[in-house]
Image 1: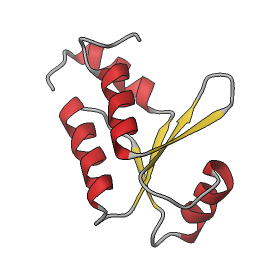
Image 2: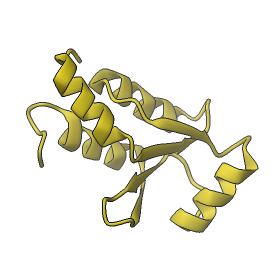
Image 3: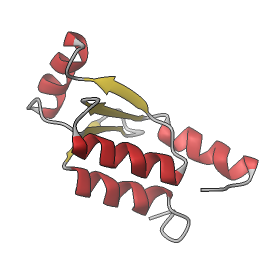
Length: 103
């Protein structure tokens, strides 16, 4: 997705509080990564399969080790843990797609 420099900078700032817990070969994780790429959104990818610290953080924060899971750090210091690729992709579109941005 093409954006001017200022718009991309705003997207990058908004995405700085996001992290995707995922497995590299999981088809549902791949679906989310493709949507991130399509939207031009860069988030930290956390390998919950091979990294024990990320796996433990997912279990402690999200309540279960299930991927994909998007951790959304809110401005008030709380974290939201969003599971299910379709729900994650819908949230990403609502947040970052120009027709939906701001919602």
